[in-house]
Length: 602
Image (cartoon, rainbow, N blue to C red; front, side):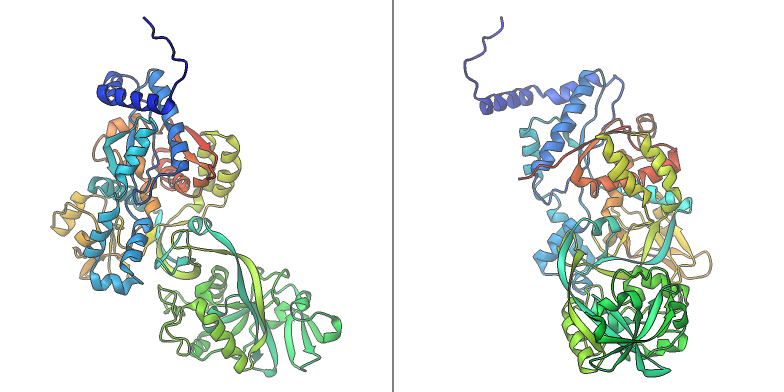
């Protein structure tokens, strides 16, 4: 007999009654038992950090995931639904740094990596109970008992295996590139991370003079919004094809060289200046000038402090003369390398430490944080007659997504995954996936893939999966380890944990007479772990090999639009490992269907 529907329903009470019924009868596990022999429907759940509490976005995305996987189950499939936890990386480390007032690597060295990582481990599951309560309260069926954590040794072992496959295919290299660098977190960030947090800011705007050695009464003038990079100046760059002028400032009598199209950067009216000569930029090639500072004057012996050419100098901003600090600007670095002003085998002119403070070479500003030093550098330039003009400039500038501090651009040695050569294949595999809404695939994500760059996967940090490379001091001999068994075979030591404190001291005998090989100090960017999740959650290929291969690629994933540069870039890591991996290893995309939900504003 069907019970009559009551005249009024108190929905919160009904929800609690249903949840209690599901709990008493263990309905979720019972459903999994009943369906275990059915065809499998594969679902990947993007894991959260338990260092923060769930918010509306998690609840919305989780509801969509629950609807689709329930429907698949009711349509005759077996659907494993495992909850996962991101445990490594900056989100955890930044919390510890704030709590313990850690300012940089020296503070970590004093306390020791083992203690630092112990502190991180203590907070990674801080809000796990709140997560389970909230997810359960929403009525979502997902397996918390059979979860995975990125800190599990077996998960980390698969991450090593993933990297080893890329290494064996020649997709891993060590390089120096100018990258966004977080001075608060003491580590470089990927370009996609730096794109997450742009702000409109007022920065200083200065025009500085560089007297020609052939005639110090004539000065090239360059504009910059980063005065802190001026102590590292090694060259000036002009456009060889555009028109330049020698111009006299009628009010001061001083003579400058600048781009004709950029006279407006210094003068308000034509009455303020007199043009003395016109010539193409290429006329200036190789001309020597007087350095601003004496810190790196010796670099002049190897070609520094001269005018170089490049087409990246445009007529839209500045003076048409661009100051080159090669280790703080990507174009600067490229141009100076091409002109042999920077040498790969020479120590870089990079007098800024990982906390963003000037090192001993910059004697006038040593110890000062670079952004704070701007005003002191401007004062120094003015007192010595090198400042032509100063003001402020409003522009959009990247901030660290974790610490909300300004990023700087800095050349640092990093380990990279080659991606640029496979852009067409990435796009082809992306086209095989069914996206809802479709425009995200074609536009936002597709455009991003078209601009894909080689990916810096190393981080100068502590709490993460260590990069499994053991190298000689000169990096000429490199061994990539792909499993714990291989590590034991090569070192003679059996380990049960793969974090830095457990393996950093292990050495591998050199086969080339170079003594012993030591592990590089870096850990993986935690996005690399997230991208390895489909493999690592199954401990592939060490376990579940056939089961995984029979159900790959996944039938379904889902994520919010705000995450197309977060975990969804990890679906660029699932498009940088999966797509790079699934393309390189399996020749197919990592998933078949994806739902991208909108934002919840609250």
